[in-house]
Image 1 (spheres, helix red, strand yellow):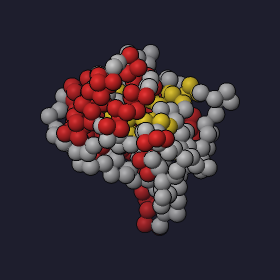
Image 2 (image 1 turned 135 degrees about the horizontal axis):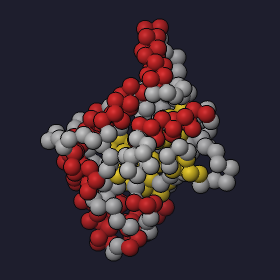
Image 3 (image 1 turned 180 degrees about the vertical axis):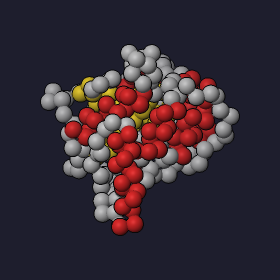
Length: 261
């Protein structure tokens, strides 16, 4: 586990560099390097994601001015979106893995989980990972009064802004539990969307919400910053490799959530 870092606010999030659909000849070496990186981690290369849309898809209007709640992005392209929650595990090998594989993902961070090493997540942000809000202390929001929900969400907005240099646009409620007070609190804190999920990664496979147990275009996938104690001996990089295998087997690419939402 990484040692605590005193790193200050990180740079504004930049998109992770991924190969273009038609890379020029000068990028042939870079492409070969990415393929070698996949081999190093024992997985096959994923499909190349399409270029981001010039205009972000619609389909999740906030009825009555409320913050929309989404589980997938409206698209027909075979792309999915990776998200990692909490922040308890701070495996330096995961930073190496993401740097080498250049996989885009979004982090939904809880202050009580990340405060022992804020700098670890600065490293991931510098790779292009998005920073989202996952409350201060990871409570069941449905069990809290409106004022307490607002404290959990707005308080984390401020902490993430101070540490990572930008106010999060996206929020994920712990356990996926929310109510109308949650939507009102999120809106008052500057959140633009509440992000849920369609699949959640366990250790070797995904847990699906749909009966056909298949990925669908635009699905959002939930994983966690977890280590061997919670993964029955599997490391976070091992879990992530299994996740990427499941995506590759179904012929999907991984796109950056913030490019579509």
